[in-house]
Amino acid sequence: MDPAALEILQTGERTLLRHPVPADAPAFLAMVEASRALHHPWVHPPGDAAAFGRFVEHAATERLQGFLICLRDTGEIAGVATLSEIVRGLFWSTYLGFYASAAWAGRGFLKEGLGLVLRHAFGPLGLHRVEANVQPENTRSLALVRSLGFQKEGFSPKYLRIGGQWRDHERWAMLAETWEGGS
Ligand SMILES: CC(C)(COP(=O)(O)OP(=O)(O)OC[C@H]1O[C@@H](n2cnc3c(N)ncnc32)[C@H](O)[C@@H]1OP(=O)(O)O)[C@@H](O)C(=O)NCCC(=O)NCCS
Image (cartoon, rainbow, N blue to C red):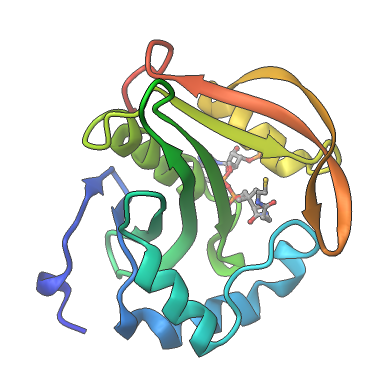
């Protein structure tokens, strides 16, 4: 893949943000395969070529934005983020999803990368609210959204059906007014 052909959406100190493209399939699917233990039971990322193709197809649309958080040095995929159910009108809101590559987890790349996602959401996308719903037992994700400055708004019993079961979630949100701007 020619890195120069990829549109970089946001750049941080160690990571950059871009949409996935079809040529990412081998690296993306290898990352998902190698990260199963980290992702289970919290997220179910695209796990085959067809599912990845659908992710790419919808990753830069009105309703959904999908991002790869890549290492600036090597271009490797450190993590993935999505902004889904983007609603404008009176709402200008979206739901944040994310997962790390096990190979790069725990080094602060997701924290920086999700900061870039917020910068993109409140900047070019013009959104007002980014909501993250996290299961109470998912301590690493709760620590991450807390450290990014999300505010806990509430608790939603049986909120999302994940792995075939309705799961309780904590509702965390960041507003454009409280977003500190990226670093
Ligand atoms: C939640 C998840 C994305 C966190 O990924 P991560 O790679 O650990 O995230 P980060 O490294 O950016 O998190 C910050 C951690 O890195 C550390 N860190 C921050 N900057 C750092 C740096 N420059 N160098 C080294 N470590 C650093 C922080 O101290 C923090 O560690 P702590 O958790 O012990 O406090 C990952 O565990 C995951 O994929 N979980 C499964 C998917 C999931 O649950 N998704 C959310 C569903 S709602």
